[in-house]
Length: 354
Image (tube, rainbow, N blue to C red; front, side, top):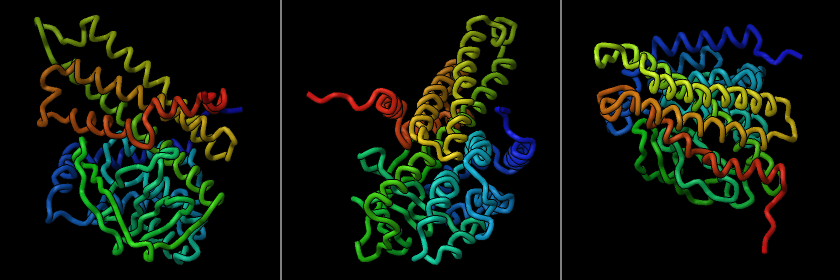
């Protein structure tokens, strides 16, 4: 058995990396911070050419069936591309729309005129916000709720869709200025029920795992870029007449951070494979991936900040854009502690109650 990505998967990853390196630099990340608070900013990712270009490359519609305008591929094909979106610190809702909502609506949305929605998402003309619980705990905030065309939410034993015009959104602060967080409300009459009872529970569980996996992949990409930026910095920053990267303590810090990242990366890829195969171990493997990726990214962020010194704290320096995204995503779709608990429950069973 060959445990490696195919040449086609790697070629598409390289194409996305090259595109984002040219078209979505730190300048664009800063613009996303500014646009998040500007009343005159274009409405969401649809006003920016990067989202449209990613749709043309097939990234947005990767999990949508070919008959509906997508590529009909799997989470294993998608994981490398989501990782690249993290590496670029892409502010657009690619996890929510492409990894979570697209495959969910592809199966459960006949009442929404499914084919039209699939084509609108795959072509980059529509985005979808998601409001799903972490386990039995409701998530307090929804990403890009004010600029999405549709909200998919879990309420009680129902999975529902709500058109954007029916939503009441209230902006909430975020440590990452490019992440637009909202609390949302709507009238019950605006809901379209996609699934109820056990069918809804199964759909929500799979959608949650797709979101956790996508976020884990983004964390790997973010950490990879933050570590790369730090290595570049310690080669140039001089102290006592030599680059600080020549100091043994700095080398050890960076080596430890790289070790954490390289342990996390294959765990994320394994979870993508498990999800693509529809294995019964999906939840366990996804939780391992999110826990490993969150821990590794936080270690990389801390190491990067320490090696940069005081300049790492400044908003003028690019590192903080990646570091704050890491802090935000490490706590999103379940933090490392929550996912470790889920792995333990999967392996050992529920904790006894007294």
